[in-house]
Length: 576
Image (cartoon, rainbow, N blue to C red; front, side, top):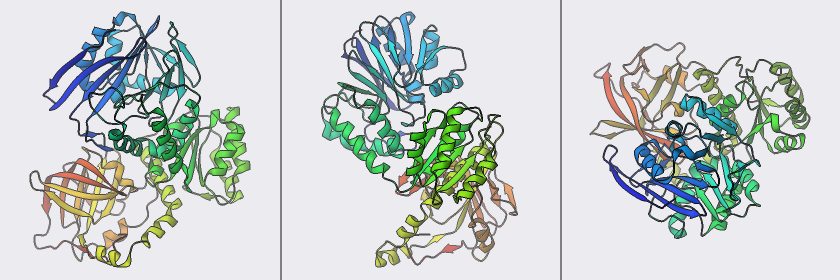
């Protein structure tokens, strides 16, 4: 395999895209897709230095490709790959995880090399089946299992779930001591250097990447670091940014320190689910998504692979427990369940959900046992006999958010009392209007009382809204989502305020008893609103404990020309 660089401009995206391939070890080549001008990556990242998508070729007696690239590199990447290999001789495609920026060209590879065997975790293979919609050869691997490519290239797989997708695996080549980690240890940084020669220039981007993607799963990071601690690592081949070669102990130590600090949480919630049984994992992850909005630490634990000692340790560390009902015929899960029952204490909170596998452990007898011990129920059991609908998933997410808010209530009260009194009073003099955000997204609806709203641009007409990260409606306000901003009228908002500021049960209809009609974007307009604006989310900016949601405005109407917008006056600046 010969190193080759191809340069090309992509005028459709107004960004500079190039490909560079280079040998990094014996019979091992990195193929780097360099996206020089990308300034945003998903919602989490505002990028300063572009990004790269890295994949790798390993040539033994058999040939393996580790990951692919982003779909935007389709022609450049495939042309480069054709220069490097004969597709008819490609034996394996190893998928570190199935996020589209790394697996966007899997279908293309299958078309060019239909004989290839895709290697990945069980979850990754399941995800791919739903992505490519065609049959393919596959090999499911678990932590510690190996694949021999010949000529000394013995690949060992390391399970690393939740970093930051549930299907993540590492691959370690015993011949070259290269560890392929995909997102882990990566960064969004694009330059001509293959390796981390200038570590001082990279540290800020390295930490920013960790904070956005890995920090919320700190305990999973620590578990993964433990699994690789005995490996002799000469190169960390990451999926984004430069490969790590010069300062590996330093980079690993950063992850260790940051994750230990994150994991020292007084508010740990352990979610026990049963992998491959019913919809246990999906519902568990929906609950976890809601919990993570509230700055609690979450561990997802597979009941079907947990021994009694591990189950006992998890319970002792947890402030809250969520259990998805396992099969009555799963002996490992049943033993873990009995261990949990024997280990809990009355100061913990508990929540239960059905898995929908057809042979679930009965939920209400188990609920009664936990109540007899004295545990507080965090939310009512989630009952799901069939595949979860969007409504069920939203209910699970909101239940998780409510659980997290309850666990962190003391911290919230403490923060409300923590500001300097002069500063607090000064901030409180910033007045604002009163508004209601209403959303209808498929079968899921939401509403939120808002006051931190301002016009943000003239061309195009734009509005910015600050939304707390732990609000249930936040997940319905992603880029390209639509909603209605209802402007409330002075003297005619008290009834709406009383209704929408009350605490709703997870998944409940916020609009029961409220007169509405439908806007052009499908979201509800409040009949008692002074005015309304149809909005589309254009971008999001992270701002501490809030998201700043910038929207463009399509249409709007005033119901009472001489009406006056309701104004919210505060006396303090550290809560609404």
